[in-house]
Image (cartoon, rainbow, N blue to C red; front, top):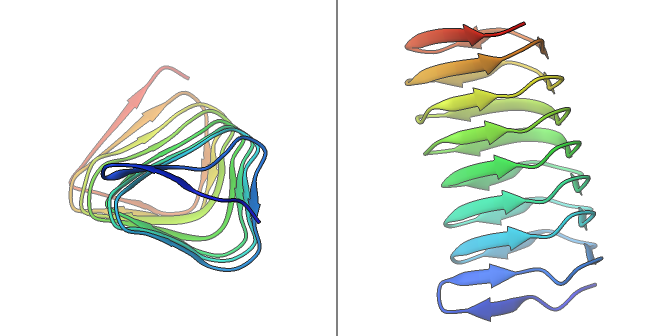
Length: 137
């Protein structure tokens, strides 16, 4: 179990950390690569989840940048923008903000009241948004 470092409204997980239970952060959370959460991750602010990290259950946050090759085994629920970087694997996404999906992403259903922008080839469930844009192949 790791100690979280706080700096004002921003919280940082130390490099190489893992968290056994559920984690709740009252602010923004920056997570370095290869950090593992074996429970639920709830972030009151913005989440930056580093490459090759994993979350065993769901993620709830304001907005999210999900790093490349991250695995989230439960739904990701946000109120703002969500970006899924290359080769991330996410159970599903539900948000009110814009969703950007990069090449190689595997995602279940994506639901938003804003735009969905897909860059390149992805695997997904149903994509539901106000507008849909596919760039490249």
